[in-house]
View (spheres, rainbow, N blue to C red):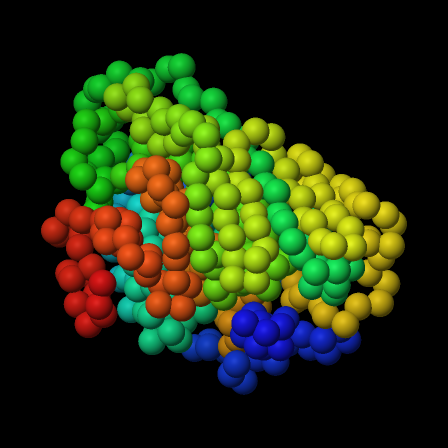
Length: 430
């Protein structure tokens, strides 16, 4: 893809110009009205980052409902909301379907485990509700289905990842896109290895306030284990893709954007060295790996476990950030100078502000379903290469593996029948 096509499709604008809204006016509401928000999933991320941010913007939105499979968590989120607004109006739901049926709600924030991201988004979109959703998708094919539904319904969709709006990574991408590094030749990314919990590892009965069957949803039926059900769901492959799709979704978003592959992806991924998986009967994702990617323009990228860092190298210099949102370092000061630039990336103070303004202005959000799907696909390709322990060639246009039927089978997963996409969205192909 040439740079002009990339800039047009990604919504990047020339410095000094503005973003053109897709539609004039506000979608479905008077511009002076508050956007009503329903929070689906109010665990640590759902509350401490997401809910608290919406509560900071009383002139743009109003949180009117919260939902969680854990009634204890939902009640706590309701209390926080009511205490902030000094009211008793916030509604509480345990089943997200009841929240989606609430016609007073304009938009939803989805902060559930990964395996629920796409099903709930699709159900919300088909009811005409705008969606801001945590990363990533669970499989490649459901990511494509997500994009198809968003395109068909025309709702505003924002990937709820802060990297596009963090000054450090925003600056890093602009440095690369403005040619400060010359021709890019390599990206080096390191992901921190998570610590597993030491408690809550026994199989027990679910607490009475938890709808565990609804938590499982499309995932296979498994016993309840406290640590695997809440934050540490990330290390069980029926719910998520491990550290690769967790931390990788952050740094690889910047890599995709900075390299001009925001709407594409790599053409090759190869696992190197020994891959280590959790194998304790509770968790089972990879926690040590070394992946080498290659793009069509011969750009290479290494994705390994270690610290938290990203480094972009070109034939005229390099730039890096070691440590989450740490200050940029570069081969020389000239690299960091963006006083004058031909390319400016759209941004906002955070993803929530951009989501709300996108609804008000009737335009696409900055981090769209398509760009999120492309980053997730890159990571899913990596997990599939690790699982098969083989080099994979990928066609980012057809979104298929080349001459590898075993890998193609892993582009999707079997879902529990009552939550299958044939039931959720029968008019769309999956």
